[in-house]
Amino acid sequence: MPNLPTHRPRRNRKSQVIRDMVQETRLTTHDFIYPVFLIEGQNQQLEVTSMPGIHRFTADRLIDEIGRCLELGINTFAPFPAINDALKDRLARESANPEGLYLKTVADIKRQFPDAVLMTDVAMDPYSSDGHDGVVDAESGEILNDASLEVLGQMALAQARAGADIIGPSDMMDGRVAWIREVLDSNAFSHVSIMSYTAKYASAFYGPFRDALDSAPKKGDKKSYQMNPANRREALRELALDEQEGADMVMIKPALSYLDVILDVKNHTNLPVTAYNVSGEYAMVKAAAQNGWVDGEKTMMEVLTSIKRAGADAILTYFAKEAAEVLRRG
Ligand code: PBG
Image (cartoon, rainbow, N blue to C red; front, side):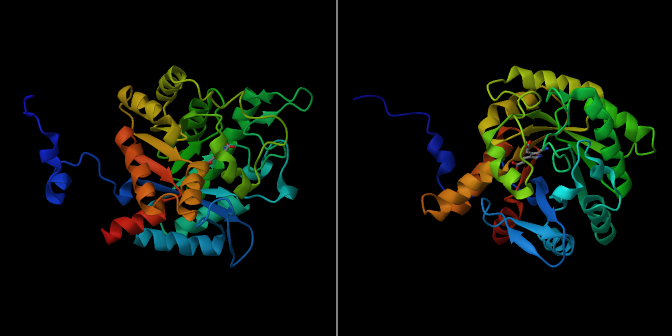
């Protein structure tokens, strides 16, 4: 007769109490950063077709929504604006307009909820007539790195003036963290943090987000600045640069297809590591759940737990509110 097992890992799974005791990763609402979409107008909220349960809010409605989220224990928000086409131009000038939709709303939110933490997005795409994150050369169609820095720096400064707590450069231009840090520091905003999109991949998972904001590139793709999904070591190179340039926190985006990158970055830095569970990842779970193919709630919690287990200290996720409701129920 073969020997019976002496090692029995199942003993640590034998009851709910023991399973809870040995659980390694636990989600809390402190882990969540909630990306929210802002549109012009009043008293309206429009569901994003490809993101069931996620709405584009007018400023007044967004403020109500943030109030509800704060009650649920979500304290950090990442607003993204949908800008009218008439206001878009080559240099994304609207991005630094303190009276524009985005900055006015950021200031309004901070006035209403001074303790809410706002992470604002630095990239040209919502305001660019080209739909790119940087300046496009009118003749060659190339993305001009150093001309973009100028625009991104002014955008970041305007956001800091509006009350942003954390600046989130999502543009992937070289040198922008150092540039933005310098602009902030020399204008008395040394207290404003930078969460760098350190490894942002040229991903197909951004589709629903671009629907929501109508921000898809008019021509070409973003592969000359966003990273190749096939690369892991390159993320460590970007990490080293972001640390050198003064980032306070680093981010990996998307999350679910990049758990190895999250772990690797975590193992190579002492900075807080965050991950962006992006629109397409949200949409996949929702679509399967609506078809009855997976249990939406359990899948959501498993996805978020796995991102945290991989090493994320915080997660930008469209599931934030729903997951907070689940956590509250216990
Ligand atoms: C662009 C930006 C994108 C997202 C956040 N900022 C899309 C893109 O690079 O085209 C995507 C987020 C998501 O899919 O949820 N600066």
